[in-house]
View 1 (tube, helix red, strand yellow):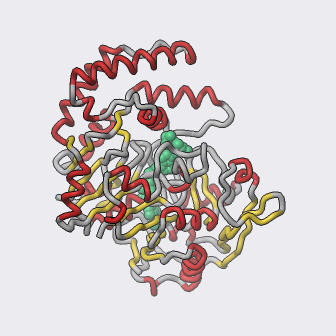
View 2 (tube, protein in one colour):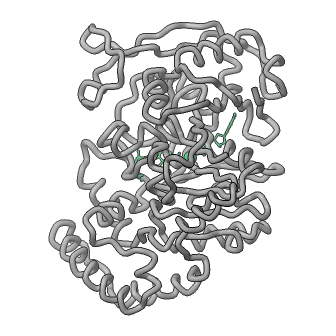
View 3 (cartoon, helix red, strand yellow):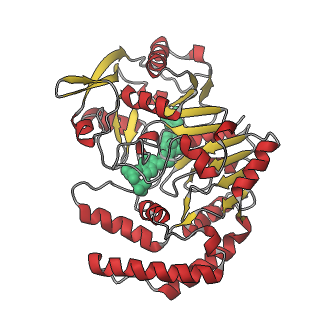
Length: 423
Ligand code: GDP
Ligand code: IMO
Ligand code: MG
């Protein structure tokens, strides 16, 4: 069984927790896009791990974890993450393979990311400032530096010199910044190369062998469908294809080998950063859900904006990803509410809009149309089986299922492994 798991909203749906559970039955866990802008939380024995670059399966002994070609890698962040995991007895480097085709993030990417945001004032994206956008821009512009270049000293020095020359000109002329020293960066990155060299390989070949031998592969999406560069709320998106389709390109595996596509959705909606968010709460509910759901970013610590479940978003995700099932998380966060709303469609200038608009100005002007359901006002975190859930919680789930047109196969009622209901 080869499974792709994707975020079906604006990221932070609880993918880390679900990946951790599914990893038990997988042989390989593969990241295929994004970089250390991701923050995937896994709670094991009351210890919380936040994975940024390394697949969340790494916490299971002996599972092979792969950083696929579609990922952008900041070697400094990667080495830090490996060392952090080692401190807790996780063999992060032993079980990790990194594609020789990943693009490398440099300090000039991080700086340009931050400076561009600062300069924008209105219309800023609210990026994580990890250099993700500028690194992918270099990739598409065909001037990026890949892992295979980093491991080839002479080629690396030549490419870095050319890049720094151009980046320093931009930094000096547009941003009045002094720029970077080639010598210092070159030495530093060659040092990183020596640390990770043994983990680098052609990971697409490793995966094609795994497919041939009938191994189980789990693809770990980062970000979410509405942050996808093509299908999200452009330009308030990340710079990669976070949707299921991105897994094949970002790992080098043919679409024919995919058996299952799981979408992770929260029982409500959240988003970090700027951009339209039709069902966003007003202050009182915002404070309440932010607190109860601990909705503060796993990467930047920023408060996440929260809102009602938006089925226009979820339906869009179901279609774009071809979801075969849903893992629904954070149902427990709604436990106290008396009334729960579901957005079933939008209205723009008083007229119904049934589908997810591409035009960002239209989307910003869309007003949600809600249907209301009574809450269950009881604790769900101890429910072990679907039958244990309060009747109104089951009604809510079944209504969501009906609206999305996809079966909810897993329900999460807390951050721990055992707080999960299989259905
Ligand atoms: P990801 O980026 O999709 O992996 O999600 P994050 O890790 O950024 O954010 C999800 C947060 O919700 C983490 O703090 C998880 O520990 C937590 N979490 C996941 N599932 C549940 C759940 O069912 N209930 C509650 N209360 N917390 C959850
Ligand atoms: P996980 O994998 C939520 C958001 C940023 C910003 C936009 C662009 O944990 O779900 P970027 O740094 O990627 O250029 O920022 O995307 N963003 C995320 N939001 N979860 C994430 O990852 C995110 N990764 C990026 O907040 O709005
Ligand atoms: Mg996250």
